[in-house]
Image (cartoon, rainbow, N blue to C red; front, side):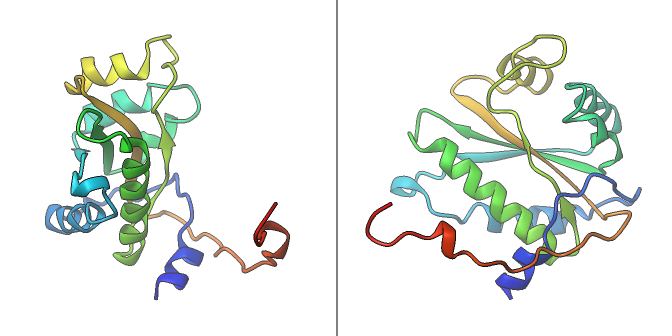
Length: 172
């Protein structure tokens, strides 16, 4: 049930050294692509990084946010074609969210790393970094990285809470 997956899904940064079946991953990516899309444009595409050297390079991209990536058996770069859709940020975010829930359903763990704007620790813009390292050129832009793997240790589920202070009817 979706509610159970949402409660169970947590950001995980420590993964077992266990390969992810490529058929399972491609199936997950297909379903992640089925989210709402402006004019049915579907601008979102993925780069699956499972080469250890490339993963190591990604882990060195930022001093804090990416250092744990070297443990992940795969990292999905979520990107979109910015020319075919003005809502590429939203659509890439939806696809990434679906991706994380679908991974949870398959017993895989994930984390979200925002790389839409900013610089690497070497002061190279993320846009330039992904162009140089992965061939992502305009009109494509990277939204986020999603490391995927089998978690090393357990995590606590989210707990339900009183939402009433955050829900407003008819006006703020």
